[in-house]
Length: 108
DNA sequence: TGTATGACCAACA
DNA sequence: CTGTTGGCCATAC
Image (cartoon, rainbow, N blue to C red; front, side, top):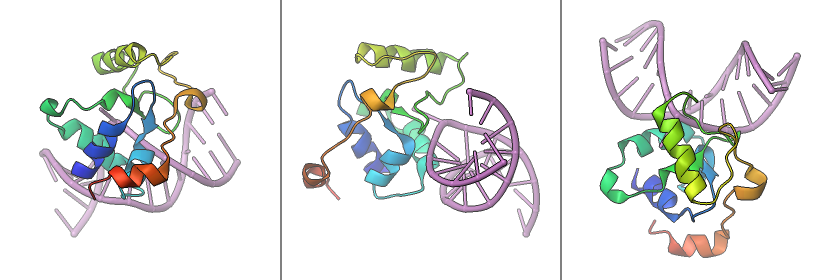
């Protein structure tokens, strides 16, 4: 759980990642669903950039007619990310960390 | 013990 | 593009 939060905390402004990728980086392959749960549980005091996590199809996972959907879209746009109908171009905005340097920062 | 439900995913038709 | 399938796992009833 902390591992997931830590990875999400590293997401740079203007980049996004998917639940599955976050799970992989956290050393929990195949646990995408667990990531969504971890974000829901995360204390607000952590100020995690949760909005930078979308699904593997490059879309916001909330239903389009919800508040959560709108706030996530707004936060992404504030980051400078283009969002069209809940869709984000992974080709342009996916976070591709350098694994070598990334590993050095992990506390686990 | 069983079933249903998620801020999921990859493969396939 | 959409929909389905099987896999995943914690929670809730």
